[in-house]
Length: 179
Image (cartoon, rainbow, N blue to C red; front, side):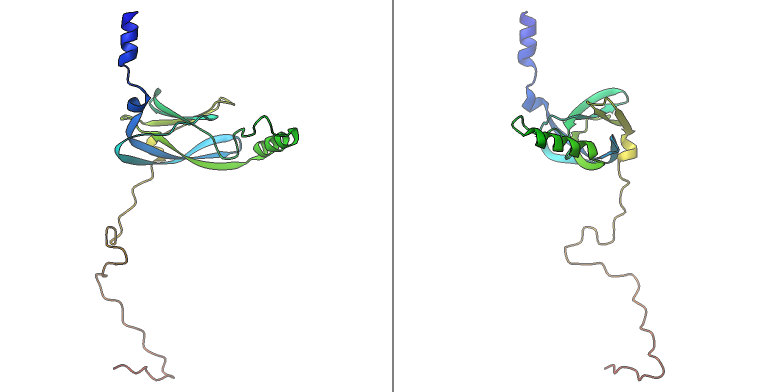
């Protein structure tokens, strides 16, 4: 009994245990009654940060293979039951029709990125459907740096070769005066 109480007392609480430095911003789409993983972008906080927690119909799970490393609950816009009990029955019927007729919705979810994460899954807690993708397939390829990347705002680089001279004027018009 004392060991259990000691272990519970020594276990980190939510604020310290849930602070993260690395995260993923995951783009998701609800299309024809299925959640789809579209893309992911890595991010890093300068200082360990606690992500806000929400409840939702869907669970985004980060994993190493089949071993879950973290999860975040979320909802797609216009898909959650948002009516309070004091809504009229007509308003509740209209809201259900809106949700049932929703074809496409998109959202972005920020999820912790523990070391070793290689798989993302979306679990629909209502229909019990699971959509899974590898992290590598979702990460955007690095964009090539332009010559002006990192330059001061409003400045551009000088081209390596001078521009081509202007074309000669048509023969029926005189050449413009050049000083």
